[in-house]
Length: 427
Image (cartoon, rainbow, N blue to C red; front, side, top):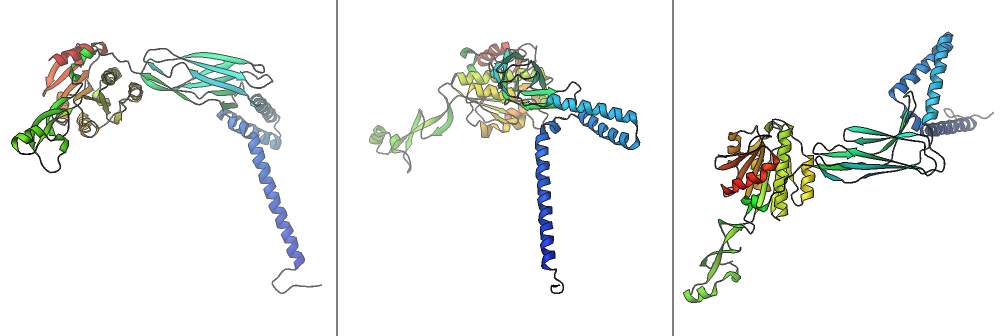
């Protein structure tokens, strides 16, 4: 009998331990792979359990344990009934779904009150029939459910639906999900088939004729008191100083006086409209006032874009896109009144950086804005700019008054806006 050195196992014992370790490692790995396979296969079922289904399963397991250990026949019967219900529910929701689902909106942009229609097409892409199911379609905060009958191989089903557009908003439509559930509600299996889409519900706007926008008559620009060395409006002559552009030398005067003379120009300011729309919830008595203000803002901005004038729309959260009428209306569809500490005067301070070239500035506010706030906000605007304010008060009579040289219009209906602007320009 051979022995190893003290403190070392024999070679036979070491080999035995090595084989045992390898067997144990292989067994653990095999069990891990088997469990992963079971989880993957059962995942559609385990994810499908509702809260009620989980409760029923827990009660069934407890009933089986109590019935077998304590020998209670009534509890065993209950366990059998619950188990049969769970197995039936699993069989009901199992099965591969092979649908081709398409979601289409007739229009992705509509105006408040206009009809918005969509279509849902479901086709059985399999050769075998598919059992009835339900298609769920989230629309905004709600969910519409469309039952899909049993479809033979290649069969189709179509649903036409209408989307309410009573209020300006951006409505998320979709994604479409097929739902298969058992009658008891133990299991619910969902499969997503489409992406979500957005429906823009634009605010109502009023078309403004050119004659009604007299405040923006300066299409080619108007002269200011600022002098510049390069513009389109000639102002005077002055002596040449080093660095002046030689193209502006007035040679006839230079020859007559013997002194090098250059032209000096008046700087012009091109027509640029800045609309300051208050989105502060405290400035409005109700949602109706805010909706009227948004419509007024959209009407002014669209007219400026239509006449190829620059427009900047400022709200408390930043600026909206005024480079295209669709993008402006899309941004107006998203805004909502928000409670804020920032006031109208804070909004006016942003004009210097966001709309420094503005020639006309229009405040669009609610009835809760006080004359003091309007006066303070107008004092923060650049000098030499035409300033007006439109205070929205639904159903109020059209009126005009002045606050610190700022013309203030009280507007009760969107349809009165063209007449209100004409009165303002004639004043």
